[in-house]
Image (cartoon, rainbow, N blue to C red; front, side, top):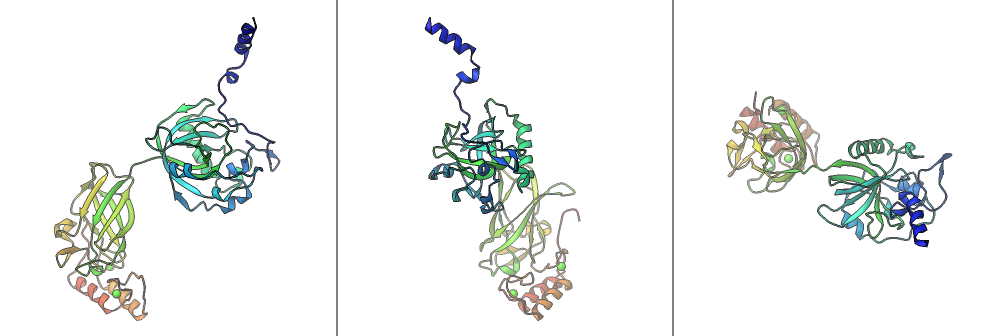
Amino acid sequence: MKTFIYVLLLLSLPISYILPQEEEEEEGTPMMINGVLACGVERWAVKTCIDADTVNINFNNIVPSSIAYQRSLVHPTLPSDNTTRLAVEDTVYQITCQLVEYKYETDQDYHVVIKTIGSASETMVSEIPDPTCAGISNTSRYQELIALRTWFSNRYSPTSIFKSVGDTVTLTGVGFFDFAHGQTGAAPNQREIHPILTMSLYKPQSTLTLTALIQGLYNESTMTPDTITVELHSASSPYALIESNKGILNSAGTGTFNFNNAINGTPYYIVVKHRNGLETWSATGNSFSASALSYDMTSLQSQAYGNNLIQKGSKWCIYSGDITHDGLIDLSDMVVVDNDNSSAVSGYSVSDLNGDGIVDLSDLVIIDNNNANAVSKAVPGI
Ligand SMILES: [Ca+2]
Ligand SMILES: [Ca+2]
């Protein structure tokens, strides 16, 4: 009889009392912020970055990280108040990871379990706060959090029941330590990303390995390393710019450049721009395969559109001297060098063609010769 009554009692209880409780238990008195009740309690100011110590966070310095690293940190003694931020909680991280499951919590957070890509169990908790919670609208993160919350809501429609998902995302957010309440997906050290600040679907990058030599910087043996801009352009008229990326060519003239928008099997012109080099295009369109492409602009003159390269030793180089970036190497470029020479300009300068840190006659000679040969840029469609 006793058992029967117990079963009846059990059946009359709401389902939520029977199922295991996985939500965070919030101990203590709700915080008042500017006369408004906060959405959560425990360490709530820290969780939402409305605490005074948030000034210690440099939101512009985003540190690449991993879930493995976050799980390896030592769990510190946590402050008993709800507003003190620890020094180990003042860094914004960027992590590319896989979503596992998520739900809408009673403190209005979206509780998002994330894991190392491909791992079965290397998880941690991350949380998206509700930007309408007290105090958040006064912070510099407000617009960012609205955009994040809206994006996540529209894509995943969180409810009070966990939903599974396998998307790979790149997120940024603040490292944080929580108390252990048996949170679903918790790291062993209770490390969380709390709050998440941004999230986007991960796009695999395509890598271009480019070899190009800049005439003035190359001594027929090695090149003074320098920054260039590499552009991918459509191989079809009007040859629209697809994506631009800056990087460094090393002493062998080689550099790697990552692109987000390149599609495997689609040909692109590779365009090299340099502070005083002549804009130079690849001979034809070139395609990435398995997100990789190698291109050598030094092996043959015909590697550049219009054969627009100059030979130095056994290599072919991009012409130096278009300081004004008008596609011509002429008197107007010489005037810049001449003036900088008169002003004894030194250091990293647009008019230092041979990269020795001095602007002088040796730089002028390079332009003079290219001017004498009427060198100008060669671009498809012109
Ligand atoms: Ca020029
Ligand atoms: Ca020089």
